[in-house]
Image 1 (tube, rainbow, N blue to C red):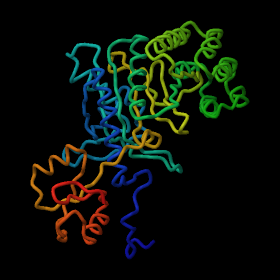
Image 2 (cartoon, rainbow, N blue to C red):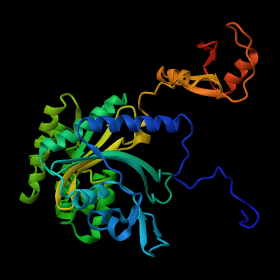
Image 3 (tube, rainbow, N blue to C red):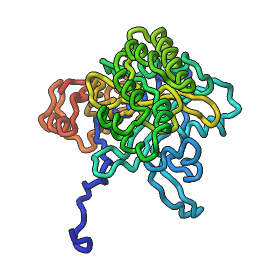
Length: 387
C-alpha cells in the first residue's frame, strides 16, 4: 500500500480490537450488570480505577509483573510517562492501601472495565480485554478463598453457564522451586513445564527434576491431587503451600457442595504477583478460560480476588431474551410510552410514519416500516398489535 495515495479501509481495526454491534454490546452490558448485582448482594462495593496511570505508580510493587504487557505513552500535560492498565487487580490493591486504608477489614470491592494489553507477537489475541471482578482484602483464611470461589460460582450460575469447574494451582510454589534451578536452565524449563513435556523437564530441571515431574503427574481431581502432593518431600518452607491448599479445598467444599474442583500443581501461569492459591475457571462448554484469580498482597495486606472475562462468558452464557420492539407514532403521549416501557417493550418512534386506516387492520406501509425498523409489534388504536 502506498501511504501517500492509498488509505486503509475504515473497517480495519488494530489487531486484537473489535467493534461490538447491536445485540452484542447490549448482551455484554446486561451480563456485566447481572454479575455486579450478584457481587453487591454479598457486600462487595463497586469502585472504578482510571484507565491510565503514571507508569511509576501503575508498574511499581506488584505492578512490576505487568510491565511487559503495558502500553505506554507520554502525558503532554505533565511530560511524564503513563501506562494503560493491562489488569485491574493491582489498581484495586493501590486503592485499598492508600485511599481506603482507614476502612474496616475485611474490605470487599468489585469492579468492571476495559483493560488494554500489548499481546503476544504473531498471535491473534484480544488486546482490549473487558474485566469484571471482586477482591476480598484483609483476611488470609481458607474461608476467604472459599467466599471468592462461591460468589464467582454464583455469578456464573446467574448467567446460565453450566459444567463449571475451578482449577486450583499454587504458582508461588512452582516459582520457588524454579529459583533452585541454575539460571541458564530456567527459561527452557519454564517452556517445558508450560508444554507439560516430561522429557524436557527431566533434561533441564537437574536435581529438582523429580519434584517437577511429580507436580505434573499429580494433576487431576482435587482429592487425588492432594494425596499425591502430600507424599512429596518438599522443603519445609514450601510444604505450607500444600497444607493451605487442602484447607482451602475443604472450605470450598463446605461453602459450595458439589462444585467441581481440580488441581494442577505445575500451573504457574498468570501474573507474577500471586502469592498463594490461584484459581482458573473453565466450563465444559468452552475451551477458553472464563476467569482467573488468586491470592496476592494488596500493599502489605493479604488479599484474594477473581477476575472474570465477559466476552468469554457471553460465548457460553444463556442467550438473553431480546427486548420486543414496538413501532409507535411520534405523537404518542409520554404516559403511553412509559406504560409500554414498564411492560418490557422498546418504543421505536415512526418519525415519518404513514397514516394507518381506521379499524384494527394495519396498512401495508405501516407493516413495511415496522419490518424495516426491526419491530415485532405496532401501536394501533390504543393497543399493541403483533406484526
